[in-house]
Image 1 (cartoon, helix red, strand yellow):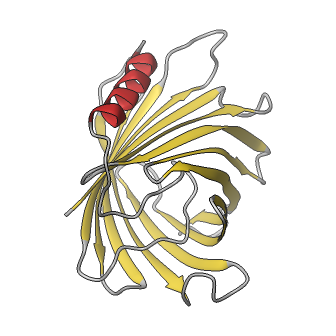
Image 2 (cartoon, rainbow, N blue to C red):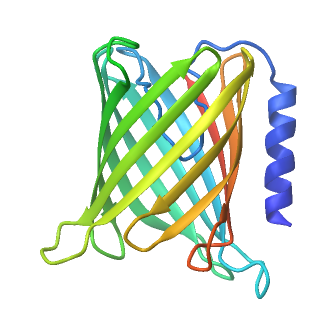
Length: 234
């Protein structure tokens, strides 16, 4: 029920606020592209994610809310601080910790065969070990089609822990200047968990919003994950 409300609210929101915005449009909800904020520009972003482990035996979901403040340090480097809240099924929402990240664009668009962006993140957790995450982001625009691939390294700071090697990838098409549709896939090479599904991205007057879902491709993977993003530049 919550997932239905989330999807309907997302589409109604996009329809009500349609228009052109002074912001960089993101095409995906899990995959990063060759984008950073311009110098001295800021943006507030909201993430809502629902994870359903097994739709057959139990259709309930775990929820996560993230609030991100993003700022352009230069035209190629931006920084962001996230506050993270989690709600397990049949439990109350609680504060889980914060994340700090930097993104750096190498060169300018189309100078290299593939556009390259570097991403580093520190995750400070209330319960559990702190985590370092690094991403190599490769992207390319060909006409109205965007291709993006993220190679992801993730590990705790504790010696002896096994690192996770993950990926997120997407292909999207610009239907209109305000709307993109696409397909995303994400997975973990170490645990053999893989999923894929559709994404729609919209940009309006002073805001943008994306909605996407991925579905497990094997029994190791959560059955369904749904994410809604909302961005407000200022």
